[in-house]
Length: 71
Image 1 (cartoon, one colour):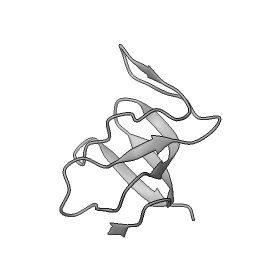
Image 2 (tube, helix red, strand yellow; image 1 turned 135 degrees about the vertical axis):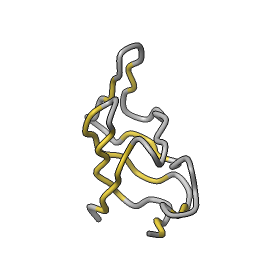
Image 3 (cartoon, one colour; image 1 turned 180 degrees about the vertical axis):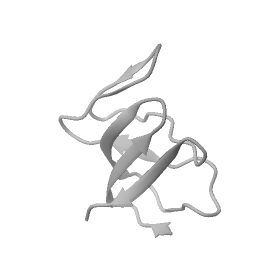
Image 4 (cartoon, rainbow, N blue to C red; image 1 turned 90 degrees about the vertical axis):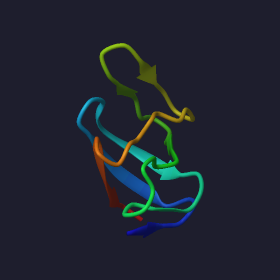
């Protein structure tokens, strides 16, 4: 699936849970290994050792998460 810059996404990550993010540049979920995502306002993502808040770029790897377009 091709995702355009600025698209709002629901992310289901196996390590950091569920959170919402926006794409900060275009990417393709079938070709790209890493997804360029930035957390949207009010969202928090955390794994065992790290916490990410609004405006930060948590790592989103193809094999560890699924993304769904919200808008």
